[in-house]
Amino acid sequence: MSSLAVKVESRIIDLSFSPDALRVVLADGREVMAPLEWFPRLRWLSHN
View 1 (cartoon, helix red, strand yellow):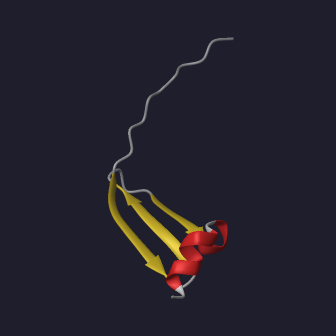
View 2 (cartoon, rainbow, N blue to C red; view 1 turned 120 degrees about the vertical axis):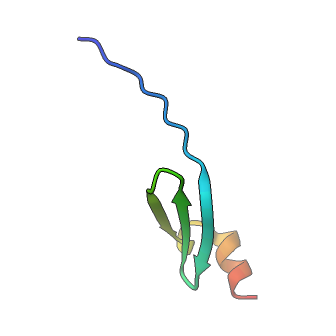
View 3 (tube, rainbow, N blue to C red; view 1 turned 120 degrees about the horizontal axis):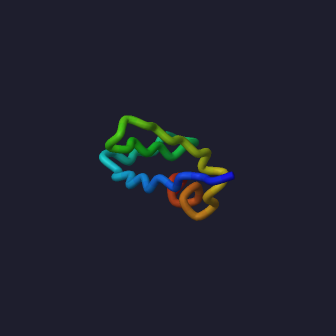
């Protein structure tokens, strides 16, 4: 069985924070969100 490798380059066009999440918008329209709980240093900075 063969597979085709597709290289996808994602570019960030927007980055924002809410009180409990990190949000990234990519040039291809995808939006990725992650809880700040996954990033203890960022969570700590958001409270100071």
